[in-house]
Image (cartoon, rainbow, N blue to C red):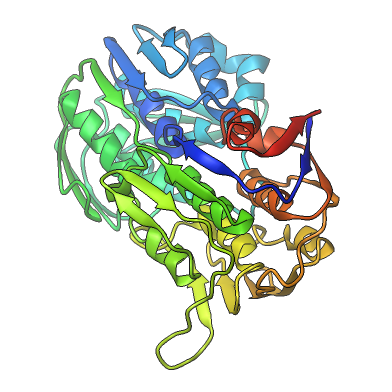
Length: 436
């Protein structure tokens, strides 16, 4: 297992292009299972989680052609269902949370699917109820196989049937799974309290291009009229909004001047305004974001003078994947911020490492941290630490880039799961980072 050695304190400079969106890729790759024709997806990030998902589909019998590093063509002419009884399937599916999204498309097209308990980040309880209840409302039956340790999900002999459902939570992956199951169900499916993230919008647009009939795209009320068959298509992923936010935070923490090209500005929602509340200046030019070098950035207060609170929420609220980034950026701001991570109870547990680096943070409980900004009066100091999950890992990487001295970050497989060639790309900006 690798590590990064980072010598902090360097000012970065230059231009960086964000990778394709990891969370979107997970959904649209699984959508290729809905047709026996070719589906080509461009701007695919070359990261562990996505490569593992592509390998999983290959093991299922999907023809996979990597036309370029960032372009992959899938053809699911048939599926080898014997593969689901193999140790290889169990191993690959359990280490990848995105494997849950094979359920909907396989159920829609073949009437059956299988799922071991999926893996992913250890950031708290991430239940599958929304996925499974939604599929059951479409008529699927669910049975847990104790011997094989997986869920077997089966459609009725006459196929899935459209229905009305109110989701108990606006789950992004849950919405994606149910939409993919419903596009070939008989009749009309209405999904209320659907997630409406840009990634769901992209999935729905791709499915529409494949012949699906979906209305309400971009809202939390989706209406899907089932069709008998879908065909192939080409699709391009959005820029990864989490990378964009990470680079904004990195520029601020290191006092650097950076330009983020092709940032997908119109799909960033309130992300730029949240960073502006931390005092970070940025200029938007068409689809590019320029962050000037700032010696200091000062946190805004609310209009009544109370301490700024930044909390995550379902879209169009602030994405939980950037809470860790905002927290670390706040450590060197001027002012105090209350970070409220509502959606996952273990995501803030990396702050002990920031405290060891010299940050002033009070962890109030598993969901809230009070960050007292140092305004660069005291630089963070380099230490040895381990990456607990993807987003915390990059947050620690940003802290190390700004710190005095050398830091070692272990368990960087977690970072590689979500950020492609991050060490090479940062070196091109002037960072002193080495993979060891």
